[in-house]
Length: 145
Image (cartoon, rainbow, N blue to C red):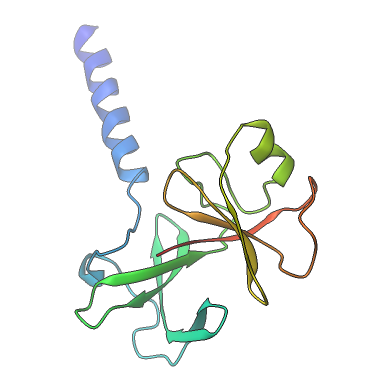
């Protein structure tokens, strides 16, 4: 019986580690499958900056990344509803939930791009730039730089 329990615990731990792997800044893309390696897809990485990006899928979560000149990831964005930050937030989470959980951060208002909160996980939660931030405002996407 002890061996069965130990085996189940090991399998659970290995499964946890696999599902918790996330793409991060300053990593190489070599270990990830790039969905659009030869495309001309550009994303807005700041209010006035478009950069060539690549789509990467990890654990069924879609990310868009841009690369530095030394081929390391310098910007990551996702609006995938399956993505969760270490803070427990996802696309669609209301601002009221963030303030109830006492996740505090300075609000950055990037005109034409988003109202953004830097989270303790290192991700920024971005809200609609067209509307004033209210308790009912929802996260539209996450990014990391």
